[in-house]
Length: 470
Image (cartoon, rainbow, N blue to C red):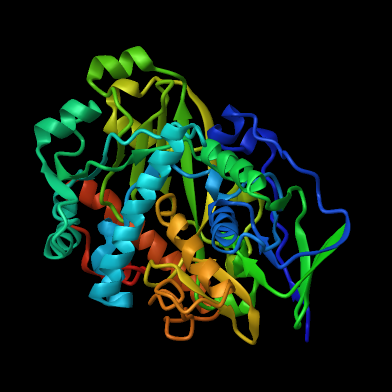
């Protein structure tokens, strides 16, 4: 069989790394793969998905020899660059149900809520210090067009007999966030925020303590498939009967998977510590906050009093072949700075100490996909977390572990398993050209709606073509 060439991730320069990674001076704790070795399962990717899969594997089958191979240090990809927001799948239960049906959607949502409790146990037990603060997740509206964006999800959650959300008043939002930009919304109280890089580091250390062999700074060059696969780096190879691909956006380098995913850029800034100022405006806890525009804003107050402020830019690359430009925005976070000044005008003079970006793996229906790589029954993958993964990847780990171990359980039978029944995206250059046109329309629509204007008919039509909008 032909070898599968893997796209080599381009590591961010030191100054382009996320605040989270710089904050803990994240480095590799393990040596690169050197020479040849054997394993029962090789997991490609040392982020949340890969590490949770490894942990689930050794928990379910303790004698399984599991290796994790990571291009940089564990968490240097999306797991260490995100906004640190923790919320359950109940926020997307309606979308989830369209993919897997009502019963399975309810089960997966409950599993994500259980994952939040698992994170809480890891924090309180001292197993992982991830700065977890379950002060709630606030899903808000900052314009008339955004009002009720949560209505379908809230109704479906209530219909499932689950009291997960409660309505927010404008007064509570202003009191808790220190801003009047958002004035309506709902809260998921058993949710909140984490320090993403600390979580990734903790999962790596937990995996190592559980007997998983981890090889960092070991980008995969190629995978030679067969009954016994060879997973090859520049300096060594692992022979294994089973491979798990958990490299998120970088899986777009595999043509069979690129048909079902697209990669967009999200960008984030971090201010200098402003604890006294944030206390003065009433923003005192670790709630995660987002609005409902189509390129969503998401933000939190860090434990040290920094404002972590993210925004989906929607930027895409031809054939999803992204490079260093996806590690940091060209305008050095200027779009985020403008939005920060709108939401928090009193912080318009705050010094921005960090700005960074990163690729987000997305699917047309905004739900992850799990399966075997077409034509390769012993190579498994999970992709498409759409920027929502901290409470979802523990569930993904269960699905992938059950698939790898050949279990006939509810995880292996999940409706999220099966790539053939999921909608494929258009080929290039249609995909790239169309995405550029749609992205411009979404940006125009966001700007108009936030200003209180109704966008034009063509803008509305084009923006509605964006994946995830039906």
